[in-house]
Amino acid sequence: MPKSRVIDPEKILVRATNWVGDGVMSLPALEVLRSRYPSAEIVLLVKPWVSELYHHHPAVDRIIVYDPAEEHRGPRGFMKLVEQVRSENFDMAILFQNAFHAAWMAWRARVPVRIGYGLEGRGPLLTDSIPVPSPAHYGHQSNYYLQLLFRAGLVDRIVPVDRIRLEIQDSERTWAVKQLKSMGLGGPRFLVGLTPGAAFGPAKRWPAERYADLADRLIGALNADVLIFGSPAERSLAESIAHRMDHTPTIVAGETTLRQLMALMAQCRLIVTNDSGPMHLAAALGLPVVAIFGSTDERATGPLSPMARIVKHPVACSPCGLRECPIDFRCMKGVTVDEVHRSSLALIKEFRVTHDRPAAG
Image (cartoon, rainbow, N blue to C red; front, side, top):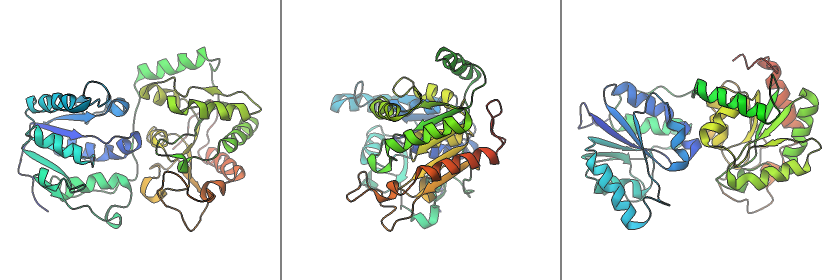
């Protein structure tokens, strides 16, 4: 493998991924980078909706928020970003984000070493254009980012990822407890969290009526309370689930920041989810997770945790990776409420989870 032309960089810019789930899956690579360059200042360039993921993370020294909708909108805003990055005098830029735009920015900012995969015709803008490995060489997406570091010669070896960890702060935990109390959910409760959305598209979403049926069954079986998480755009989805339920859940979709979502999620004893950013957050927080997969490949983007279980209905056309199903949604419709309910109860039993006792994993 080629060796980096910067032996001991003092400042490293990392262009982070644009989605929460990808951000979580890139954390092991960030941690390896920190281990490789313990004295370097590692600065993340990241879009607003992902930035809070990296707050308090030991591999990150500083964050530059790239906001293409506001501060960095249009050509003038882009040049403002370029000038800001140029003024930092970074020694190296590592592009976890695959777009041409990321390489264009680093090139315009005159970062002397620019490392990324040679995608979207951006190879000439990179000093180190790394050929994209086949999935057979990296398997899970978390290893895709590690392979970039390895193939660029920044690290001599990598260990395949089997678990990703995130932590919340004590102050965030205190906030979550107070917030739940204000919702009438104070004291020891068996909280079940549902994350029924998926920003990528509807092909990844288990039907709302099935989430509603499942929630009612879990409430009955566990004497549980149900929280429904999601983004502002998923508020109507959460409300449609609540409308179909016999019991009344608590909807927090669209009412939290990313860190607040994580803090509330950490109070749950079980998370049932589609393949989504919150799925990866829950797994990294060490929560029992039942993940429903359809159009995507759990071998590539599944939750990395010993307390995660996959429920999937095998069909010939899955995984297709499409945002919308062009036929009859058979992969998701084939996943029954009974299957998800059984998997949830089995997971709780396996890890001895109770209302006042988190998972023993």
